[in-house]
Amino acid sequence: MVWGELDQQVPEENGAEKGAAAIKSQYLTSKEKFNEIVSSGWKERNKEAEEEGRDAPEEEKSEEPAGKRIKLEDASEKKKMRGQNKSRPHMKPHTYDGKRLCPSIIKEKQSKCFYGDKCKFFHNVAEYMASKPPDLGDQCYLFDTLGKCPYGVSCRFAKAHTDADFKNLVNEEVLRANGGRTTVKNTLDKELQWRLRKRQVPFKASEAYLKSMERENGGEKRGKSTSTEDKPAETPTEAQQTDLHVEAAVKTVGALTDADLVKLRPCEKKQVDFRDKLYLAPLTTCGNLPFRRICKRFGADITCGEMAMCTNLLQGQASEWALLKRHESEDLFGVQLEGCFPDTMTRCAELLNDNIEVDFVDINSGCPIDLVFKKGAGCGLMMRTNKFEKIVRGMNSVLDVPVTVKIRTGVQDKTNIAHKLIPEMKKWGVSLITLHGRSREQRYTKLADWEYIDVCSKIASPIPLFGNGDILSWEDAMRARETGVSGLMVARGALIKPWIFTEIKEQRHWDISSSERLDILRDFTHFGMEHWGSDTQGIEKTRTFLLEWLSFTCRYIPVGLLERVPQKINERPPFYMGRDYMESLMASQHVDDWVKISEMLLGPVPKNFSFLPKHKANAYK
Image 1 (cartoon, rainbow, N blue to C red):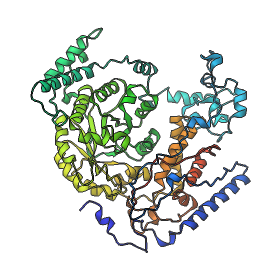
Image 2 (cartoon, rainbow, N blue to C red):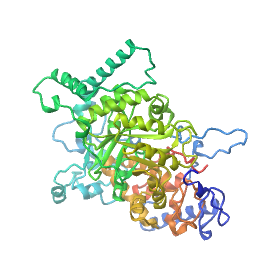
Image 3 (cartoon, rainbow, N blue to C red):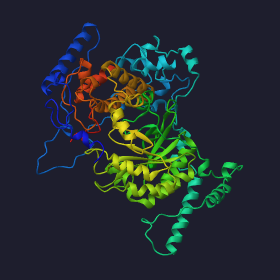
Image 4 (cartoon, rainbow, N blue to C red):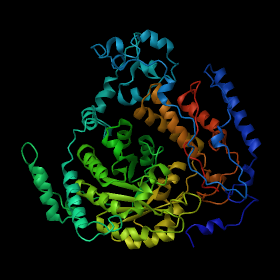
């Protein structure tokens, strides 16, 4: 029996509908009453704001776009469920900032603007301030934290740190206390970006490996004709790899060093102790740096950047390099690469090894989305073992840190292949395997197969194997640890309630209040402004990522309201009223109510603002 299947067979309590979480009857309500109470409570808040002389946000109850409406399925015609809103309206944050001030004016440079009269930005500060949207508050988080706000007059809290002449003020005491330290690492250097775009970055170690691979492939072709896709290529011995490295190194210009002549043996690489750790999964869109800081504070041991495409990194795309950024609080941090060719993945690994600080590099071989899978990456690598092996061995040959792999049970439903791949990965030199207990076709419509994860963990030994799937409480975690896994990866559970790491470590259910949850969201907005900026563009980018996160947090049901503890990840929250207005508002599944929460923290939305979450919840079906 699949782990967690017993929970589906629990009899329905209090007349709760099938698939819905059991909530105490005094809190249950209907959809109509819920919407009425939430909207009336919001009107009362607006009235109080007007009485206090504050601007009340305009209430525009708009219908959700057609892509988000629930479609009734006909019994005879079932459509394949999708996990993404592909046709959602998408507006870039800079579109909300109609008139932007020139960076040379914001930074108060003594020299004139480099572009002169051709500059497309504003240079008249008084004219800019007249058209600038009103400030969002009297205190600037960046000014209070850093001692100086890098966004100057363009900051949406500019009154807190500008004088009558619009000059940026500095708090010397706070600035000295910070000592000019850099809290974020792995930023893209402009000079490196230029060299990447001009293809002037050398990849000596990668070229040596790729040449050796070509020689092996050539030897195979001259010999008997075997399928290169089905038969893995042999890897050069340690001595051969050293000779290749020396051969490439001799062609370099300048003095030779030990690093040029002597290649690290696997035992000399940086060692990472992964065992008995809680691993925050690399989460696309929502697994950004501000969210990872929240999870680190609640006890996550390992963090990993969002999936980055190797081709975009090699081209020097700033948006892709931003996914590699690491906060100083992330003591055990890795990056995840997506790719399907040994040459690009090996070169990208060498590029990262030379230019950023990470503790491990993860290969994404579990991504189920069509865009990635159809070109042979993500889950596609599990079916292309020859290329998969070359990628792992190639990256291992150029990296000074461990290579890890994230996989699924398989591609097709009811056809598990992970147990066949794991013995091969052990030979390839993988340091950690993370197994998501679902296939690509299955997605989130069924529970994760922890029995199969247990079998695979025994096959993987002595290499650590982490299990992933359906962990939303410390009981789920304890049950998962009864299998042979070395550690746990938490994904959706962390999005729904980031304090899950604290619950697991302290083995308790945290009946967190709505005010505490709002404080967590407020901290996220502060970290977002620090990461994306406190000007209009940064505020709206922070708001977008906050709303994406709120599309998951609304699924959380407070412990004190549950008839049966703990909440299960596949149970749908019915309509219920919280113990206070904020708890009810946070339980809303409607986009407009998430926008209201964002307005409490980041002020009113722009007039042309629209939002639809990237992901849809199909796990309740």
